Amino acid sequence: MKVLIILVVLVTIVAIFVQYARNKNLKKLFITLVTFSAIVTLAVVGNLTRQVIPLFIAHIVLLILSWFALIVYMIRERYYWWIIFSPVVTIVLFLLLEMAVGSSHKGLLPT
Image 1 (cartoon, one colour):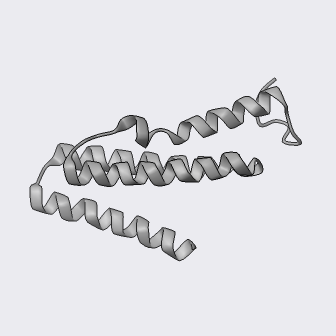
Image 2: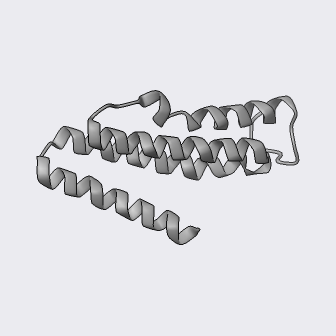
């Protein structure tokens, strides 16, 4: 599974730069790279939600959808920002659950 994730990341990076080599559209390259880095950052921060399994599964599904939204932007030039940044919802929901219910993770959030 880890190999598949690394392969998808590398294929996406290669596709971004191949598309730039064809079109020479610097603005689209910049938007695509920033969005790509935001999705990877959300994936790393999303490991925070691993303690709540249903929330973690929802986060993974939203990450996959945001990755497809990035591909749609690369192909059709339609930027669906609300799909791309939807994994933020699961992270915020997890932090709200931590504040409301709490857990053994003392020091995660200031009280």
